[in-house]
Amino acid sequence: MIDSLLIITAYLLGSLSSAIITCRLLGLPDPRDEGSGNPGTTNVLRIGGKKAALITLTGDFLKGFLPVVVALTVTEQPLTVAATLVAAFIGHLLPVFFRFQGGKGVATAAGCLFGLALPIGLAAVASWVVIAAVTRLSSLAALITALAAPFITHWVLSESTYTMGVALMAAMILLRHHQNIKKLLAGTESRIGGTKPTVIAADDS
Image (cartoon, rainbow, N blue to C red; front, side, top):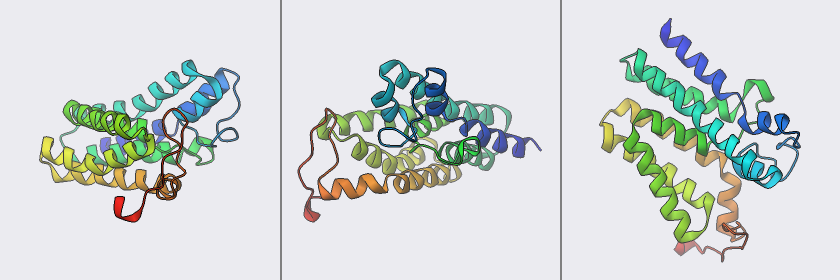
């Protein structure tokens, strides 16, 4: 009973779209209809500025962090914790309260990783920061960090169930970024700061 309640609650909490709620409260346009159309921090920053983006980022992080921390507190079952993590993340991607139109999940995934173990979260953030600083490509940093996350999880916790949960989350991040992957390969993805990258040749990828 507790296991099912944790998983369902995690999904419902994940379904609370921080971007959409923040924009409504601040009288901003619906992020699904403006900018990139993605209800996430970057698009909210574009639409409403730093304050709105910070609120969105915090909300998205917490709805990944809190369910995992609660699950770790009330149960010793790794499968339940992993399922709770995945449920919170799916809630963000496919929010039942907002016509299943969710974001790409990077901030919520970060919250899940920090909730699972502080070293995992810190390693993931460090990976993103380093790659983003070197390439100035936010999407590339997110993709590489997602690929690294299951290995980091296994290294820190040595629990295959947690690793599988994080790997599933990483796979969904990759699928959610399919348009960014196409732009990266075509050389049309914007860098941080607004400039365009050079075309990424096949032998450079």
